[in-house]
Amino acid sequence: ASPGVMQAVLERLEQDNLFVVPLDDERCWYRYHHLFYDLLRQRLTASEPDLIPVLHQRACDWFATAGHMHEAVEHALLAANFERAADLIAYMAESVMKSSEVATLRRWIDALPAEIVRTRPLLNVYHGGALLLLGEPLADAEACLRAAFAAHPGGGAGGGAVTFQAMLATFQGQSQASDRLAQRALALLPEQSPFFRSCVSLVTGMNHLFAGEDAAAEVALHETIASSDPAGDVMNAVLSRCYLAELNTLRGRLRTAQMLYEQALVQSREEPIGGLALMGLGRLYYDWNDLERAGALLTTGLEKIAAWSDLPVAQGALLLARVKHLMGDGEAAGQLEHRVDVALAGHEELTPVHRSLRLYRMRYALWRGDLPTADLHATVAGLADPLGASPGRGRAVRDAVDGDETPAMEATFVLLSQAHHWLAHGHYDAAAGAAEMLGRQALACGRLRLAAKAEIVRARVAFALRDERTAIAALGRALAIAAPENSIRLFVDEGEEIAELLTLCLRRKIHTEYVAQLLDAFGAGPLPAATVDRDRPLHRGIPAAEDGLIVEALSDREVEVLRLMADGRSNGEIANRLGIATSTVKSHVHAIFHKLNATRRTQAVARARTLQLV
Image (tube, rainbow, N blue to C red):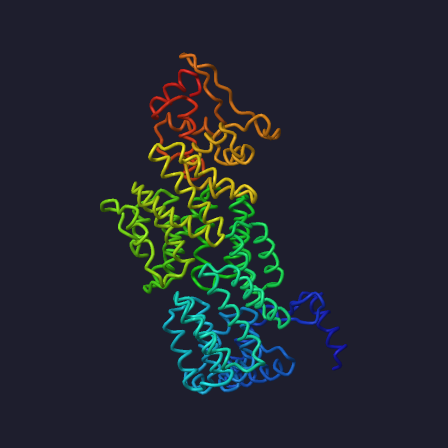
């Protein structure tokens, strides 16, 4: 029958809802209805099982001739024609990796007999690269790359193996070794190796970024984009834009980071690598306190990038857990925590990647007020033991990093994590020492967001030591850095001390409008008249106290918290009841104490009853 007749038959079958389902809007591709498909497959298996591999081979040949190589590979594997499958995979490997379908490539190569893979060094190269990008044990990736180089030390295979070895060294925190391997790879690679050369450029940019050499990092990453975009290399182009976005975030340029993530998202189309851009945008919207949008972006990003390496997945999962807690979905937050803990349990090696993951988990536990869990992850990550005597400022700096070999970016993250951990344990001198060093390093390389985080830690330390002037000065410096980009949760996630200090800043007219916005996010009191949102509900008024002092108005949320306090509820119980974080409850309690001129719960409740608030 002619193609026109067959097309008419297919359309008639579709209209009658018989046997076939269209796969596209143009009605060019159809598949059998799954029930009819199952019936035909069962009958074929029962009647002519030997014909099944023959049919898969025919399908492989047809798809390959038609240019549908993914389908051709799948049918070659189902036909157990592994030589043919290996040839097709070798032909397809670069384009599959460029589209970031790394998990698919790994699955294909894993399905081949080991002896066939050994005879094709390039397959070993791509297998090692896939294992590396998927976050598998680095020793497994290294074994594949060594085997590939040993079998073919020159040309594309050898150069490709050394390229991924350079990336592996970067993931191990060995930037100097990585740079040497990158130069060696360039010497081995043929000129017409755009994918691997872009990988080398990406690795160079990563090394500069991790070393705190931001100008050089920008140059290398822009070079990667310039070579990847015209070559259709989605993976390297998107990774470069995401690293550039991260660099801009560190430097306090959140709107520039947003633009880069959005560009990466457009370029990634439906590819898995787009999950990184989605999660990057989710982090930005979280900081801007748009929790609903952040949650949607993080959820979609995690679905896309689920098969990739642990660090971006775990970072996204922990941030989404925060969002779920803040939006009152404790069950979903617990499931996300469990997902991260399962991933951590599967990795015994403490590479820089997994150390960072432990520290993210520790910071999340501190945010939740779960100090024992935070201590556990801090210990595994190699932070100084906080349970002994205070280490003091000098040892704080020595213990927080491993020495000169620690890349600057990792060292600053460790310093920040150590400062928060010591602060939680009341080791104020040590926390201040780590924060001071972090602030100096951050300012030296222009990473203003890190400098703001360091100043917030210093403000919290000074507040704990009742040094109000130093605390307000430190917080003022952080506000000056963060105000232009309207960071919200940078401050709100730091808890009740910052809420109290912001109230003092407001009274001193320090960044008045911005501070009022932050306090509104805290729920720590009404906005000044000049900045009141007319759509917001009016705060509940309070009459004058019997002692003649005029008590500030409580917000509706503060009244809710106050009533639960009067019922004898703990901070954790109030958080669960209202669907907010424990740190937010503490901020409300602190604000209630201030407004009711109280220093403890019983006193606040007694005064509230006198004023007929509860």
